[in-house]
Image 1: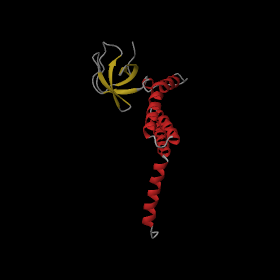
Image 2: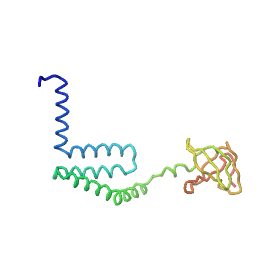
Image 3: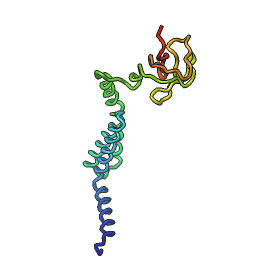
Image 4: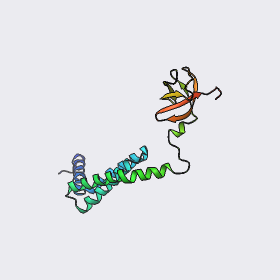
Length: 169
């Protein structure tokens, strides 16, 4: 070894790979960190449950570094259990917090435009750039395409609308 930069870099990478091979817990910990960061971006309480599973896998890797099948099994089991048990409980708590409004609740009262004619059989509106199936709040009403509408209520995946500038009966 002549100490050249190329050899030191190659040697340094080799040491890192050897170190990671001897310290599998660090890989699990890195995975948990990446999943935690991704959860912050998604905010749906799924990736954080997988991160908890990865932390459990890291714990097993510290105790039993050669039992990779046990690490994977524990990580998978903890992930599934937290997804099935902990996530629904946390979602219920979040949804019952004062001031919580779901994304569909936020649509109530919002304005948009009828993309097509809307009658009792349906139609389409665009709200904040997103297309929704729509029907009028009064089944005898027909709302023409291009009319500005306001969301009256949400019925499943369909918004119930009325013309924004008309009087409600």
